[in-house]
Each structure stands twice: as C-alpha cells, then as structure tokens.
Image 1 (cartoon, rainbow, N blue to C red):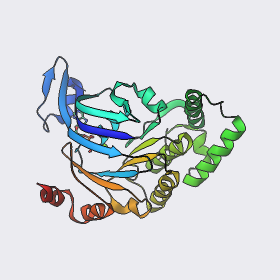
Image 2: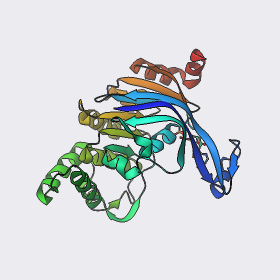
Image 3: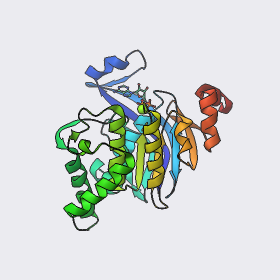
Image 4: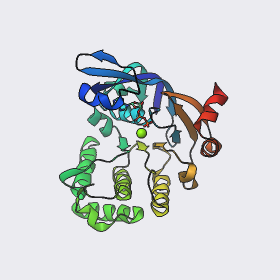
Length: 271
Ligand SMILES: Nc1ncnc2c1ncn2[C@@H]1O[C@H](COP(=O)(O)OP(=O)(O)O)[C@@H](O)[C@H]1O
Ligand SMILES: [Mg+2]
C-alpha cells in the first residue's frame, strides 16, 4: 500500500531559523533559504494490516520522513518515489493525502486556539464522509462514537469542549491525537513519538488503543525511542534510521536489542 523507493529529501529553512542549526550542518544557500539533506535513500514497503516501527537517534530524520509523507512544504523530495495505493503520493497536496487516508500524529501536537476540540474532529470526519460520498454523521451518532473512543483512550470529558490541545498536558495531547485517529480511522497512521514523555498509565492506554485500532486493512508507522510500547503492540517490522538512511530492519527482537545496546553498536554491526 505504501512503497518508498530510494527516497532522498532536503529541508528548506529560512535564514532566520538557520542559526539554530548552524553549528550542526553545512548548508547550501539559495536566496534567503538554506537547504539541508535530511533523507538519503530510504526504502520502505508497508502492506495493509502491518505495523512498522521506526527507531533512530535524535536528528536521524524520523520526523522529517513523517512530515514529508504528510506533505509538509518545508521538505522537498530530491530523488526516489513514493506510491500510496498505487498513486504517486508526491504529486498530492497535503489535504488530498489526508483525504486518501493518511494521518499524522505530531511529535509536538500544536495548539489551535479558537477551535473547539470536538467540533474539529466532527468537521474532519464529515469532510472524510463527503469525500467517500457518505452522508454526514448525525449529531447523535457522533456523540455516541466520540464518547466510546474517549472512554477507551481515557481522555477527560471536559477536554472535548476545550480548544484543540490548548493548555492540555503532554499526555493529554497524545491521548487526543489517538482520539482523532480512532474517529477518522485512517488507512495509514504515522505516529511520531506518540509514547514520548508518557507515564505508565498513559503508555498503556495509548499502546492498547493503537493495537485495538489495527485491522487487516489499515497500516501504522510508529516512530519511537523505546521498546516499552511493544508490550502492547505487535509490530511486523522494526527499522533503524540513522543519518537519513535505514541501516537495519528486523523483528521485535531488534527493538529490544536497541534498548539494551543503543544505536551505535547496531550501526557498526551493519557497517
Ligand atoms: N528547521 C530546521 N533547520 C535545519 N535543520 C533542521 C530543521 N529541522 C530539522 N532539521 C535537521 O534535520 C535533521 C533531521 O531532523 P528530524 O527529522 O527532526 O530528526 P528526528 O525526528 O529523527 O529526531 C536533523 O539533523 C535536524 O537538525
Ligand atoms: Mg522527531
């Protein structure tokens, strides 16, 4: 369903933003933008029903890959191909990708002041229904559905009435991302560090819900640093991304090995 071949990409950064990174990288200048190579030949194939884990050190390109798949304009593909359900993903606008069923849960979910959380989810769901030429969900059915999913992810009821993520704790933001996923039922969910900074209860709720939402038809890419979420999730494959490349792929045991030995020993095994 998702096929990434030899993907290479750069990030375009405005000069003002560049100083943050100037010690880290050599940049290629073009007008007021600087460019950095972030993905250096990624190959990844994900079939319907599969869960793939991507692990890797900080700054290896995990969020860049996630953002590029969702269509963030800051990332420009400079080589390779991405097909999603046999269509060229790179030709699609971000909203078309969402309408085709791609969902990104952000590493740092943004706050959207002025937009009611429940209304936001309802609008997204009705937009999806419209694309699929289905009727709008009735207010009663929407309330039943969101209540069922809210309970399952243990999100405080009053957070549905607040503005999207505004003043939510880190864990509440992550629960809210999974609530959106549960309501929208994407074909491909990309979850960027959904488990970072969670306490044990939140980790359990989030892990169990990700596994609950997995069917034979949909796929999940889970970006994580820790094998601990694998107590709740059964992945089909584990990949290690280092410096813009997948250096190793394996099964759950690879994740356990990384947690014990770190990335570097595994990077050198392959080199
Ligand atoms: N705004 C930016 N300007 C310059 N470099 C950036 C910017 N955002 C990310 N990068 C660089 O791109 C690389 C990949 O970052 P990222 O995809 O966020 O890594 P990860 O999610 O694996 O920690 C890093 O070296 C990072 O410093
Ligand atoms: Mg990241």
